[in-house]
Length: 217
Image 1 (cartoon, helix red, strand yellow):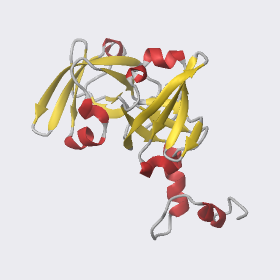
Image 2: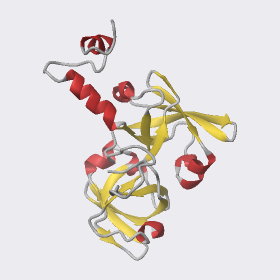
Image 3: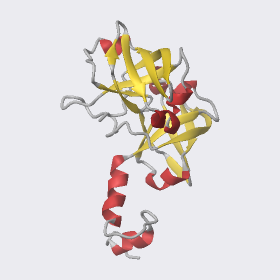
Image 4: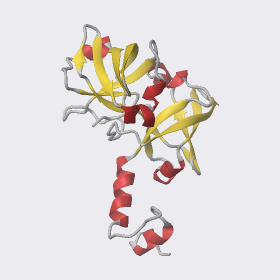
């Protein structure tokens, strides 16, 4: 588990291909200083990877064909920066929200524009994830815990403060950029609880909420 609070920016220093799989070498001095060990889980661009081996300045991680196909890890090249976060412990402040590191889908940047000292960003999520995104709810984008400001169908807006731009790789994206997205765990579990009982489901609808006693109809 993670919090979506990026701890450091690492750098891809090498990629080895093994058939359909790849091994990434990641330079991450700031993470190594924290005392990581082989076998530890580390979120890389929001994807939970295992540190298969440690190096002097970082670690190596294997990435399966499925992860390469379903996330943006397959887009990475040598020299690219990546957001890093070590796994949550009982002593870790929960400054963001609970993030599993299991990417739900790849979205894209629609546009970004100045908003005071911050920037307003608009993303487009895959249609299948849209129902889990709510105004003032949480979402992880490239492993960054963000608060949703507004939702319009599959598109949603967030505000990116200067600090987030400085300490993550998000600022490297322009319109059309692909990003990893993980929806709030709570949204998925609420849907599962409400739709339990068998039969197909169209997700959380007003009719379903009425039957469950959350609205008056």
